Length: 360
Figure 1 (tube, rainbow, N blue to C red):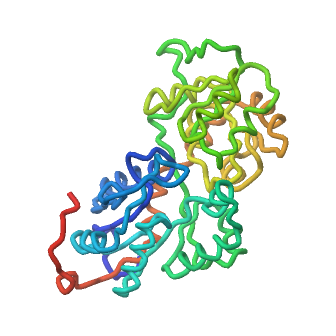
Figure 2 (figure 1 turned 120 degrees about the vertical axis):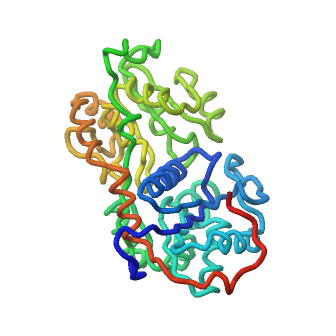
């Protein structure tokens, strides 16, 4: 940090994100945990999300709400909070409005590259990725730094012309996500033939779930999660067990009850579900792409362009080694990196004072 404040001084951190509660995804889980960790460290952190605005459902993905014409209200909310650092987490309507505010007032800001939006947009609309990446590059390069979760993502973005990339890894809640304890009774019995090949996450086209469900595998396939593609997949794959979304201890039990976690996505930038599965002792099978190749090491899973071969090899991994690897990822370290990457500033908020709603 470069504002001249003393090391460890409390900081007022404002995060603007188009992904926020009640959405259920990795970005929301990351930001929620980040705010909790920042608070434990003595900082004041708030998230401005679509829940504070009039919003409309995102086309093709109604579970996601998009803030409608947020610029004026967002300006009042920012001034009300009087931040000493601003982080723009997403590139949606709120992110665009926050970026415009910061540039208008000469305030530095950081961004994060959470989602391969170009690939997601192409999967849904066939908009060429080169056009979307051109816009994303301009969005992020005007900031003081873009935080990325993995080395391979940084290399990819650098090759596309993104600058000022900063490492910001992820963590996992090791107290919630943990291997099954035999003292607590038997492991989750799905009532299905084993081995259990498990997927956890959003059930959406960009997750490439069909590549998993098409595999010829022994035992059973289980999909935990919800999303716009669930009904179509349930109809197409009647032998697959769809549970819907699970949370907390129920989600942890689902991970621990799997024999191998199959992650078919080719577009995730990290994949928090990988760490959650490993923390529960369940090995991972995935394609050798950004995210899995940064998280999965030999002995805790298998990466292969032949996803079936990876899934079968994952069954032989040592579950204790999976847990031990997950224990190297800490949310505290993640939060310290985030703080290091911020660009704090001094600003006379009184000069900008206008009647403003509270963030409370």
